[in-house]
Length: 199
Image (cartoon, rainbow, N blue to C red; front, side, top):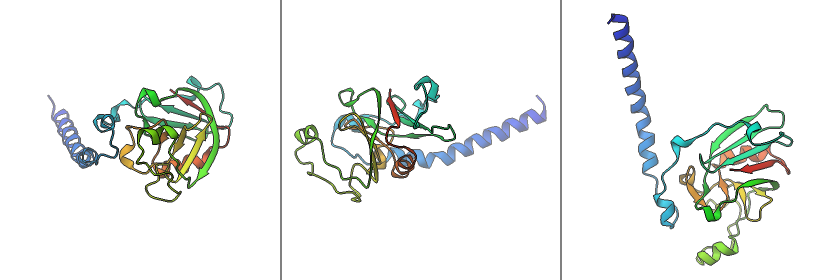
């Protein structure tokens, strides 16, 4: 074995160990996040960090008229493509906590709400009567965060989130939650009629 090969290996192994050491604090922080909902099924589901899948819009949409959003319940990510294809981004998101709350298929954005007020659905209040009747927009405890985009399916939304620990987890009653900065960016890019597909 030549000295140059040995040197390269030594450098690579040192670099890999250094990178591993740099990433360790974030892994530890992620594991130390507090529980955020009472449902035991939510606490026991781990983050799906390694399940991310890349998508191309043509695999899911026939066109990009008014842009397109793909909500992937498997990799727990939201993808957006602009109409002119100049903008594409993907962000991790929270997804419905059970199949019972999951609706798949094609829908669209029907309403955009800035600093939305949250009103629990009748079923949510039936399951948990301790929920408040409403939480006003701007309240840090508002489960809709700073922006909400209603879908044509009643009670289904893409919205910001009150607790970053929910991102990447099965944590919602049917909606897709993004970190507030990501929800704000999406809110600025979409329009009424932007097509959405949930897989």
